[in-house]
Length: 197
Ligand SMILES: Cc1cc2nc3c(=O)[nH]c(=O)nc-3n(C[C@H](O)[C@H](O)[C@H](O)COP(=O)(O)O)c2cc1C
Image (cartoon, rainbow, N blue to C red; front, side, top):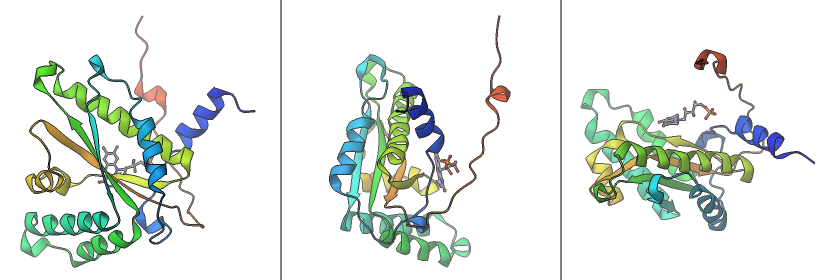
C-alpha cells in the first residue's frame, strides 16, 4: 500500500491542467462529485478562520449563459478591428464541451481586519485543493482567467459584492478516453530557494 508521502507526491506531481478540447464532448460530471470536491476545497488554511472563499457553480444552461457572457464581454472590451471570429467560435464550442464552471471568489470583509492579500491567498489555497481533487477524482479541467475575468461586466454578471474578487473560473469536464500525455515541466526547486544560516 502506498504511504501518505507517496500518495501525496503522486497527486501533486500528477495534477495537471486539461483544456475543454480534451474533454469528452458534452459529458457531464455528477453534481455530487462537484459538491465532494468543494467539501475538500474548504479545508484550506485561513487566517482568523474567516474562510473567505465563495464558489458560484454553473451547470446545464448556466454553463451556456456563462460562455455567452464571456463572448459578449470579449466583444465589448476588444477594439473592433482586433476581434477574432475564431475566439467567438471557441466560446460557443466550449459551452457545449464543458460540464461545469466554478467561479472562485475571494470575499474580503474590511471589518474582519484581515488584509485583502491574505483573503486572496487563502482562497488560492482552496483553489489548489480543487486542482488536486480533480486529479484524485479523475476530473479534467483548468483554471481560466484572462482579461474578461476582471471586468466590471463580469463582476455584475456574477453578482459580486463590494470586496469580492473573482480569481478565475475552473472549466471542468470528463477527460477524453485518449487523453494526451503532457510533458509538464518546472524549473528545479533548487533554483527557487536559498538557505539562510
Ligand atoms: C492564476 C492562474 C490563472 C490561469 N489562467 C489561465 C488562462 O487564462 N488560460 C489558460 O490557458 N490557462 C490558465 N491557467 C492554467 C495554466 O496555464 C497552467 O497551470 C500552466 O500551463 C501549467 O500547467 P499545469 O497546470 O498542467 O501544471 C492559469 C493558472 C493559474 C494558477
